[in-house]
Length: 434
Ligand SMILES: [Zn+2]
Image (cartoon, rainbow, N blue to C red; front, side):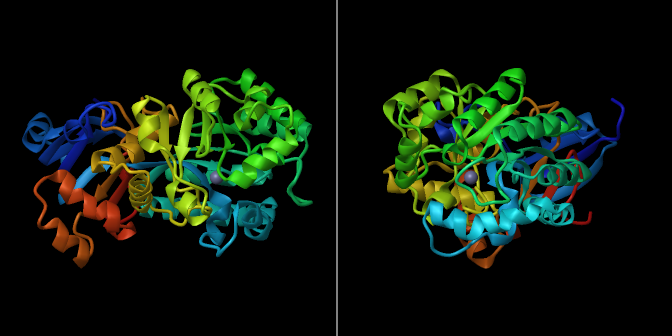
């Protein structure tokens, strides 16, 4: 091997199986004293510390003590331009967009402002242990440039695209069917596959795109099927009724995408709460990804996603903050909200299921699990190290734990960026000095 080897020491949790497919408590391997060997930005090996150290006796060692080394968190749906207006009080979805979101998104035609927020946003993600995100941008190509440049500077794998809207949005935030196609294609050509950048074709949602615009973006996706496509689906009842008015010929909400070439593998459908049986069947048949955004769904009062049903059925499901409709940048807080939503639906998600959704599950939803979201040798060394005793309240509960799942659950429920002891991107520590 060429590069210098570094061995990170700590507790190591690595999933062997999908924890929704069998007993969750045995789905992962846990090494109480474990290690992850890293070189050239990639994972070489993981396992018991003594085995890994014996294979790499001359490696540099970084000892994280009782810290838990995991794949970096993967946030499968966010809006980085909403960073500065996160936690805006008191509206339903459509009012909230008009009152808070659209005025803020107007500012992203200014490259300097876009660059400032992109840098602030990605630094907040890294402080929270999130190493990959799929983000909407604004209609401005400048907003996409800013995010990909900021990601490139940090070595991060970021999936993003120009949000397209040609109706039901204010003056200054509308493009056209043709300009959405042209601008998206130019950005895709420039960025997709450059370093770790992944371009995502991004119609915001059916209410803000004409049939012509949806068809234009569907045509672009057909030309570039290796790209992801992200949008929103069936978040609130008012929204679904509005879609029915706007597309009277459509069988259902999903059909507004399906009939314009915007349903397929690589499609990421944010929220997907109030689905019809036909929609559930079609999404499963094409192996699309549903993205669960629990803090957003409770914050905006949208409803309760059927996590356990979709996961047990084998559907790809990602977990996401939906910043700033979501109320946190933290995937720990997001896992806690997913647990609470599960409880309100009558199912207690196991800590293994929550951690899997925030890492490998989201990577699988983004079809990136061959290169991130796991500790498999050859994967990028994008890692988070959790301190399971970051606050006095968490520490005193964790001290009573009998196994790794009981030890990690208080951090899931009560943790935040204070629980992130270290974040690594391609093997380089990014959120603290070594
Ligand atoms: Zn969203």
